[in-house]
View 1: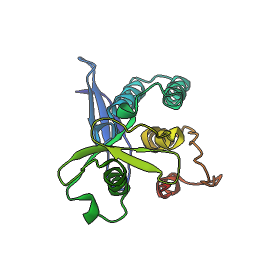
View 2: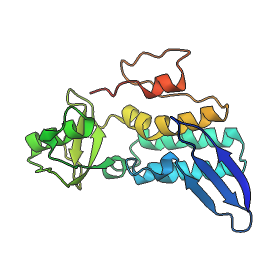
View 3: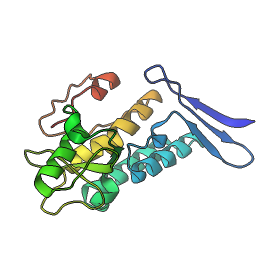
View 4: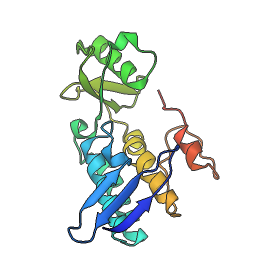
Length: 197
């Protein structure tokens, strides 16, 4: 028997979070904390937020948690390897179009002879400069400045923002470089903004 049940609707999917009264166990179905394309630090943070929602922690506490997590990312508390967005390649990078992970992989092959190929599991990370993004297998390359605003947008904003908004809470999205902020931009509008390549 479930103590609490929390539902939101996103693109026709109904994710569920429920906690059992006896064991304080949190079961999560369909939420971003289960997605493998988010780094482990992001998945752990989302799970912690969901836990606090289920157990009715005040919104102010959760908003402070989000601000603190963003700050830790911004000041470089996490390594590039911890921040990198994981993804597997089902084909050679040259066989893809202009998907962001493929672009990042091709750049790594070109500039660092990374030999990223079909079947490899890589991480990619947003960087400052004309390239915008770079991929790596195990360790981040030297000589790049991480674009922390874009990493926050990808790891935190596009995961936590929709969750807060589904609860009727305000959420302040990170402004990215030349990305124009529209005051009444809907959640769906925020999601469809193009990645800055």
